[in-house]
Length: 186
Image (tube, rainbow, N blue to C red; front, top):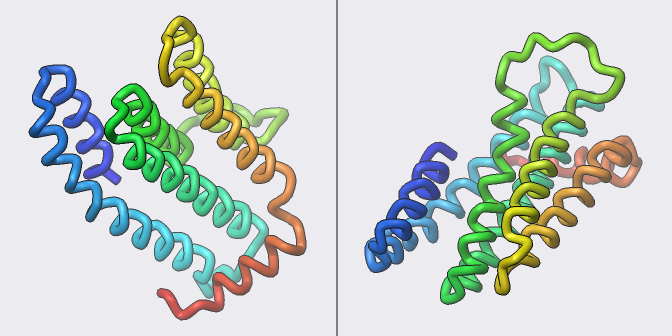
């Protein structure tokens, strides 16, 4: 993931300084990096759900959904960025959306000594992502092209956030999770 973040930052600077051919050349590195990220994250999710010392608990099922839903959003944003690579106003926005999938995992790892909240801590990380989307939507409200990307991607995030907060204790998710955990991946 650090390589991905580094790639996103590098690519933004290359565009800013009009190094388009180098941007395209380095961007091809993502064709190899993204499959490695996807495989790594699926294996990580699998190894975390199948830790036998602790068994499979509700919190593990919840985290599995969070991991896989953010990975799915990442894949959707990346694939759309590649599909629209010839339309920079769309390509850049979808690449930004790939980075927004990293907010929850990054914030969750920050040791925060916050007092108990009257709501789930997860709401804070989701709200942070949604607020960033709202700021981006506001900042580009006068753009003629590409401004629908952030509202659509925000809607996708909100759908998965709502499912994550309300439906990960559903029997269908339990069945999927047990099947996933039984796969001989890790």
